Image 1 (tube, one colour):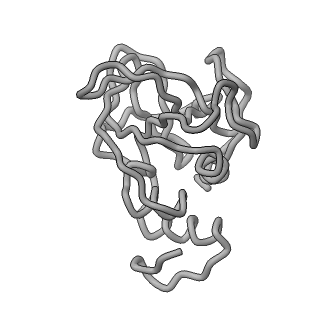
Image 2 (cartoon, rainbow, N blue to C red):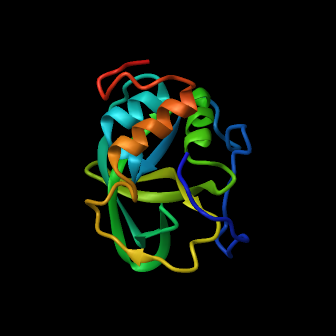
Length: 166
């Protein structure tokens, strides 16, 4: 439920779930998060349950902001985030949150303390025409209270405060 404009697809090779898990996704997949899904309370509410995360680095990309969206663009830089396991239900819920088809799941290789790992991350098919590079501390282009309100709208719930649960 991010906000933003629309655009045409870029030359990025994307793997969109289209509401169904990616090919070769039988039980679980590893997801690399670099934005709102790095925030425990947001991720737990999107998924409907907590998950264990590990720190990870994605090389060859920069995190950028435009149209109230965060996305990744190819570069000589790297992006820090977290990885976690997701099942088909988790991916379906993240697809709604990440506004598929504006974003698509893209296969990437990330570095973790345990070595390289194959993962998927949500990347905007066409980055905004005007954007700025942001650092790893930026997890959203809008305030957290607006993120939580967007999440509550997605879940069809009224806000009872930040401590409200599913």
